[in-house]
Each structure stands twice: as structure tokens, then as C-alpha cells.
Amino acid sequence: MKEKMMDTIIELFGKKGFQGTSIQDIVEANGVTKGTFYYYFKNKEDVLVHIHQSFIDHLLEGQEKIITNVDLSHSDQLYQIVELLIDNIRTNGHSALVFFQEMRHLSEEKTAIILPKRQQFQENIQKVLEEGMKAGEFKKDLRADMLSYAVLGMANWSYFWYEPDGEVDEKSLTDLYMRLIFKGIEEETNDH
Amino acid sequence: MKEKMMDTIIELFGKKGFQGTSIQDIVEANGVTKGTFYYYFKNKEDVLVHIHQSFIDHLLEGQEKIITNVDLSHSDQLYQIVELLIDNIRTNGHSALVFFQEMRHLSEEKTAIILPKRQQFQENIQKVLEEGMKAGEFKKDLRADMLSYAVLGMANWSYFWYEPDGEVDEKSLTDLYMRLIFKGIEEETNDH
Image 1 (cartoon, rainbow over the protein chains, first blue to last red):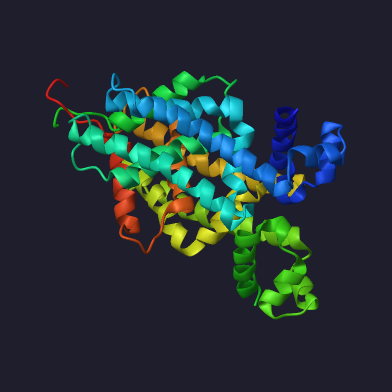
Image 2: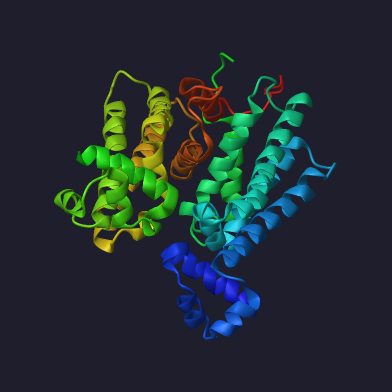
């Protein structure tokens, strides 16, 4: 029941915004009473906290599995992290928009829980880049910190435009992105 | 006066969101009367339309100058478009957040004006990529449409985290990004 309510609420927040959605809207969309809502949630912010937490926890968990897998090269790890983000659009695309757009409506106390997790995700990408540099997989003079944001930006921006059921599937989009990240777009001439 | 009010309003929208900002908040923050507000704007949506329009018009104008400059290679054009976006953070960073986050609060009629302009900006990047492919500057088998979003995502995401007065200035960030886009991060071995 709680999960089903969460889905409806994520859709409402996506459409009308956190501030534009009332508890009345939520109970109507779910065909339940206010009593039912307050049985599961303390208030509207509590729902927002749930959305943020389950969104980032899911990603951190997936990322953890990738970066602790010693059978993978650092290139493979980077590939799979981007794949994780792109694959997540189909299942959690609506949550993502709430995650990206409604952070400011969390209280300071709740932000203090979510923000370090978001940073953790970015820092893990940075670490993969740094270790790949040391291992000789990546160029030695990269700014891993700035480039971790570039990789994140490329992947996260997809949530705003990418249609998983369109012409290009997730695997293909990941391939396109990773080829850009690994090889760049410049035509290789004989000079170098 | 209108410009000064716009600046204050952009800050308010950035902090409290479009829906969370009342006209009362706006007149108080500006130290003016409601009469003054309604002299310049029809309503709150009217302000949002102004923010969206001036944000995208400024970028399209800058982009137009770049892509019509026949003295530039396509690589240079791409470089300068990314530079335009990064440079814009310092001057219009607050507008950008409103631009990215509050689109859904525009009426259908207003969205019909703004959306094609956003698409135009993306399509112009795609065209630079396509022409650079034809000219032999870029690899011939790129998906210019998907990669235009990758470039946009990388640059636009910077609005969420980049501090222009931090350790890395705009020119350096642009250089870092463009090196990634042109050359990729993979260590070039002697095999290829």
C-alpha cells in the first residue's frame, strides 16, 4: 500500500511540484482517507524524504557492487556506473525529477542526511577515475574531480530528455556516451 | 526598476520556488507597493515568462554569433558554445536554476514559445557536430543527436555545482570539458 501510494505521489510531485501538491490531492489520487495517509507518513515532507532516500540509496547500492567488484577494470566500472544511471530512467525516472528539482524543500536536518549521499556517489566516480589513472587505463593528467561532474552531468541530464522506449535503447545510449568519454569525438589523424 | 525587480525575484524563486513565492514576498523584498509590481507585470507567471525568455534569448543570440562565424572551425564553434554556457553561470546562474526547474509552471501557451527555443539551442549543437563530421574534424560515425545532449548535459549540469570563484576558472573548466569531448580520457597506447 505504501509503495503504491509512493508511486502516485511521485507522479503528482512530478506534474504539480511538491508545493503545488496538497495532501488532499494525494488522498484523492489514491482513493484513500487522510487517516490512511497519516498512518504511513508524518507529513508531506516525510514523503519527500522517502523519495530522496530510496532514490539515492538504490543508486549507491548499485554503485557499491560495481566499485567493489575486483574483476572489473576501472573502465568497466565507469561504464557500469553510467549504465546504472541510464537504466534507472525507465524504472525511477519520475523519482529522479523530484530528486533533482525538490531538494530545496527538504528541511536542513533532512538535507544533512541526503546531501552527503549525493556527494558520495560523485566521489565514488572520482575515485574510479583516479584509480584508473594510476592503473594506466586513463590519461595521467586528468582532473578527476571536475571530470566526475562531467560524467554525472551527461548521465543525469538524460533524465530530462531521454525516452527509454524510443529508437535508442539504454545499452546503445550507454555505448554512445562511453565512446565519447573514452575516445572523444575528434577524428584521429596520422599526426598523433 | 524592472531589471532590479527581476534580479530580486530570480533570487526569491531560486530560494523558495515559483509556487512558494507570493506577490507579497516580491513587493516586500523590493520595498515597493503591489501597484508597482502590477505596473511592470501582469501576474507571477508573467515574471516567470520574462525569466525564461531573457535566459534563452541571451544564449541563442550568443550561439548564433558563434555558428555564423565562418572563420571558426567546427571544433572552435563547439568550444565556444560550451564556453558560452559556462561563462553564463557567473552572470545568470540564478536564472538558470529557475529556467531548469520551473518550466512546468508555465502555461501551455507560454511553453509553446519557450520550448522550441530550447530545442533550437540543442539542434544548433547537433548541426555543428554534423558539419564537423562532414568536414572530417570529427569521427564520421557519431550520433550527433545523442551527443548534442551529452555536451549540453555536461555544460548545463555545471549550473548545479560549479563555483566560478573557486579554484578552477571558467576558461579552465571549458578546457577540461573540451579535452574530454575531443580526445576522451582513455590512455592512448601504442597499439592504436
